[in-house]
Length: 201
Image (cartoon, rainbow, N blue to C red; front, side, top):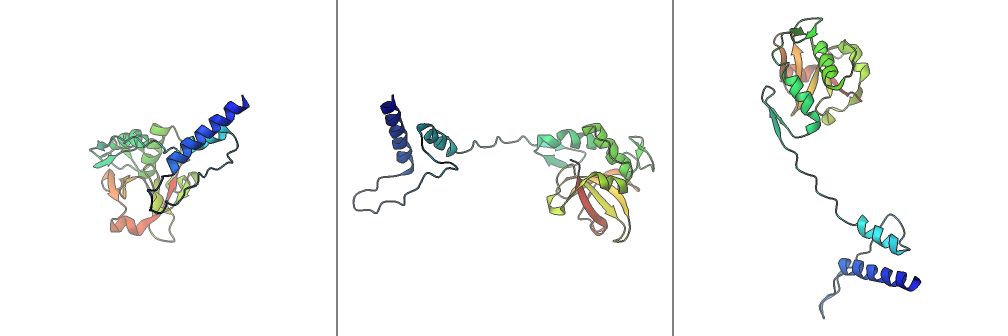
């Protein structure tokens, strides 16, 4: 039994070595040897099998189907965002109405709280200022779909506006002039007033 185990180990070792080494033709220098590096010691045939599995390439990620949300004018690939962006798209054109949070009329924080409740069942604070306390800060270059973006009129002013980030620097919000719409963080008005982004965990 012990002899069979040793023979098995030698056979596996031979297989591994044949995979990691090439025999150079006569007269040519042998290629640089490659050692089989693993995060653990190889002492048994079982360890050798684990080493072989550890060196197998990871399976390629399956391509994600792209979907286009017409009213937002954006294409998405991550299926995790589909419910959010499709629900958000149905608010486009809703008129601005201070203190309200329905599709008959909504202000900026009412829109964000209603959408988060509708999609995730999460109750955020109703005002944009207190909502900022409900999120974890995110760097601007790390913002992703569904994060909340906050604005203020000046560096010393409190938070006065809020929206939900979509992608490609675009976000959806309820503006006082046009109601629920998609705007860009690159627009001078929002670039000047951008304060921070936050993620609801």
